[in-house]
Length: 98
Image (cartoon, rainbow, N blue to C red; front, side, top):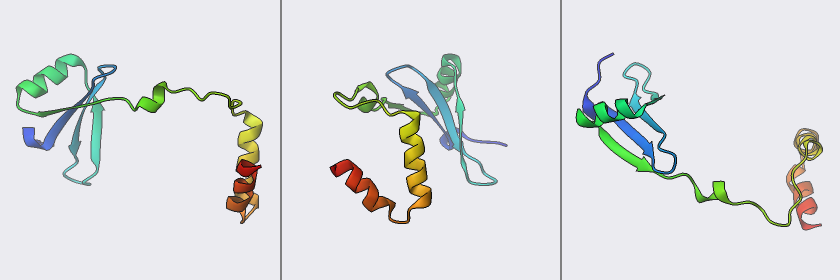
């Protein structure tokens, strides 16, 4: 597969410095993402590949206060509710409101 520099983009996370390069497969048109070490990032950018930076969502650093942790039993109850009750949205709303 042959790609030009305009077919490839490099994405670097400014928070943890993780990086990947992406391109669209010319055969299936799906976007492909591959991890990239710093040396690969440097080579690609030096070759003219576009560099895009991004940050981790702030929500990753947030911790809920006052709420009990979700347990395996909670997850199983929720799963059962979704599978067994066609009216699960109303049942869920009652659980949250109550």
